[in-house]
Length: 244
Ligand SMILES: O=C(O)[C@H](O)[C@@H](O)[C@H](O)[C@H](O)COP(=O)(O)O
Image (cartoon, rainbow, N blue to C red; front, top):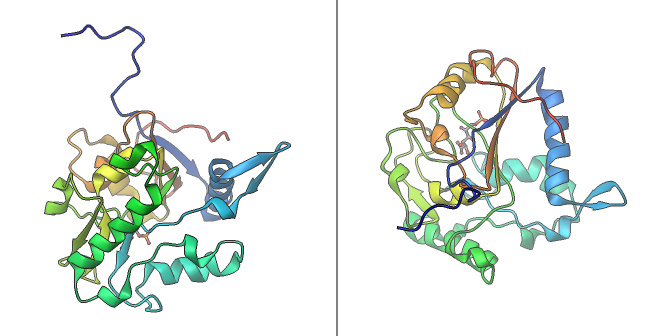
């Protein structure tokens, strides 16, 4: 067995970075700056968003038409995409609604969209996202990966169907843990006191029993928890001062 070089990079996932802000407005402002820094281009000290470079995928999606009130695309479209004409519809990867009746086929087709977008990159064994933004439910679920569900054990597929979601609607597709683990940066965005006990568990529970606590990107990836103070009120986990 070859000895490990003393300066060899760690293969252990880095500790999560917890940053807490007084309220949602502060959180949103700093999150926007962070996204611009990561996905923008620094032009003479002034970061600018290069919208033409973006490829947007959904961490999970409900199997409903794109204009349905349960659609994650619809929510993002109303709040962001429709306000950014520079971001072309072809850069936003949505589910194939002609396959809504067949979750397996639809999931495979979404994985194919991912494979095509990442084709030619060194990372083709896994997609390596620059940034994945996630929420976390009060039960500790993230994407559509729910506590105790067999999909937590999925290691082969990049995208998987779920038809027995404990949170309605029942039928969805979701990115799998291996994809989350390969990302450069995963950012959980949390607000509200109802998330506080779960966040404490996710950050402090060594057993990693909850889906959100299983999201630990491999080096050099990082996972951030950007929260409002009420969400972070029950955890003793160390805070990091926010610096861009
Ligand atoms: O489709 C879904 O249900 C979501 O993708 C889910 O993973 C969400 O991120 C969490 O439930 C947190 O949601 P909130 O941030 O709205 O509480």
